[in-house]
Image (cartoon, rainbow, N blue to C red; front, side, top):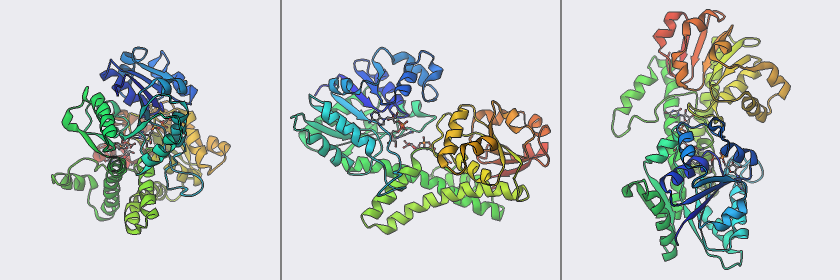
Length: 464
Ligand code: NAD
Ligand code: UGA
């Protein structure tokens, strides 16, 4: 099959940037990204590139080069499915919040709806590519749905999980460590794999494109995220040990990371990993293992989540105990709300959970984040439903800069490692704070000695 038109269902953090790069590198292809969310599509079509629905360094440039030429954003899902030879499913797959598997399994309702839509609309043969992160064996379910149409249309399913990280998405897409494509070993399966490989070959070296069977590809995505998150929980567990023993977690991370067998990446201790995927994908892995009776395997991976939750709570508790066991009526400034720097994404951000615990103690929180709107911050908190919306509004404020957020604060909590926090005028901040003034550095971005010289009481993670 010759692919000339691509449709991507889901214009989110993955669908948008991934399709923008595919369009940029394949000017001969026409790429239509479709979504049910009209507002999101309008934002993707905004002439003001600062209004794109997601913030990702370098994305605006690629969009300006491709949009309106061979990249289009639309809500006309049926039309673009029908006229494409290849359809990517890049919809969200959050943790289920209801029914069987609640709180653990991936909710596949959006994937299933997409498959049903394709089944209903398609009049010609299609290659359907799973871009979303899915439980192993999902391709079989998608295939069943598609084959039940009775329309005679043939579908070939591929798994092509995405490994980009937010904040570095454009670079990750431009020079991926690997592109993974899983497919059937039948002759039509091999042809479909080749069609997708050819698209990536426009810019990815052949040796970096790995083809496997469908189940290996689906499972590898979950396992990659589990391994990455496991490293963070490993170093975070050691951070607690460091605080009790006088060891410095950054020195330990450096020492172990110099062993080439361990490697130095993903050893940055933190207030806990956030983001839409690590937690959900490990929960999903645990759920799958448990469902097939592999209790020990499930318990092993579940421990990664247990340590992550513990790290968030431990951080909040440290603020409380350092501030003489009461934060009621005290102002605590939060620097950062996004789950990591260079993104406006706040899904599962550690800040949300730390704020929740401190608000339970009746603290007054003042937040500054360079890219997250106040609406989003309140929405994140209201979703937890720990307090009424009014209570959240009374206890929590959002400021437009770090200086306002920190004015008269008793303590500062650094929750996101935004570069601009490293170059703040800390003297000015200190002079306008309640004394003794504490900094709880949830990302270890500051030099302890430097801020202590000013007068701050510095509490980094994994430092006594
Ligand atoms: P997202 O929530 O940002 O985007 C998903 C989009 O799909 C939304 O805009 C939603 O409106 C749309 N959608 C849902 N159902 C639809 C339907 N039936 N028809 C049309 N549109 C529909 O999610 P995301 O962060 O882009 O993640 C998408 C998938 O990619 C997930 O499975 C995730 O695990 C995986 N993933 C995400 C990242 C990341 O960094 N965010 C990285 C790798 C993989
Ligand atoms: C992660 C993976 O890195 C991607 O490969 C994957 O495609 C993606 O999940 C996904 O499937 O969604 P992402 O969550 O965007 O990407 O960002 P990461 O850089 O992995 O950071 C995740 C969280 O871990 C952040 O809160 C970050 O601050 C934290 N982190 C990361 C640490 O606490 N320490 C580290 O050493 C690294």
